Length: 235
Image 1 (cartoon, rainbow, N blue to C red):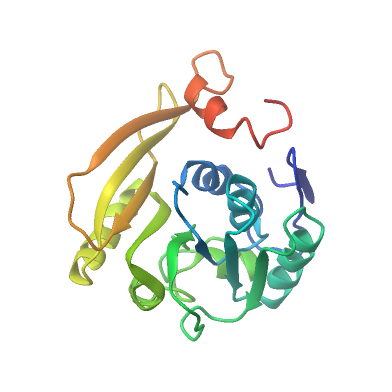
Image 2 (image 1 turned 180 degrees about the vertical axis):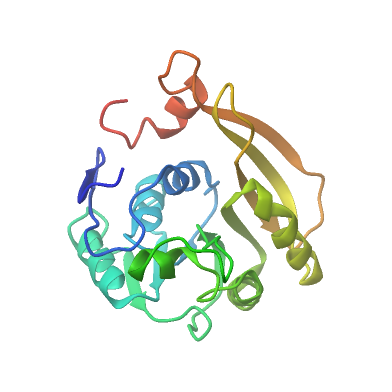
């Protein structure tokens, strides 16, 4: 998924100016996030605009989506990807830090957050910024969510499995609790390495599911193919 362009069934992503390209993590989150009854969506750290576009495809025409991106080049490219899509009137891209972004509350916030801590090297330049928590720590992310989420709203995230305990500990301190978790394995023979999480302010029993991306034969598993078939060209 690291090429310059990535074509989906209903939209096209240009990504040569974005530090983080279209990824399986992003596609998973965009396809999985529950959207029933949602009217206002915020995408934190939109990057290419992928999540905003996927959620626009999955929601009715009256749903409005705001997308915030710190990096100016990525924000400009996300805005162009939105303009070239069928949902340009429903998505607005804002360049700037989520820490200072202000808007009316949202009933759904989505984020594919940075997950390398300070001191752990991802790469140089824009990709490093996109993947390091020094530009958006989990505490800052949760503080922004607390400020921008409606009282009964939901937060949806995709995380490396190893980072789940740290984020959930911080979330509980701020009054957010997980109500749904999907454990993601890249292959049937591999351990869980990602989690999809949905959190809210209400402490509920957690619904847990497991999903494998690639089946034993090397193709997509049935559950992953069904989840993403509305997006991938070859499904």
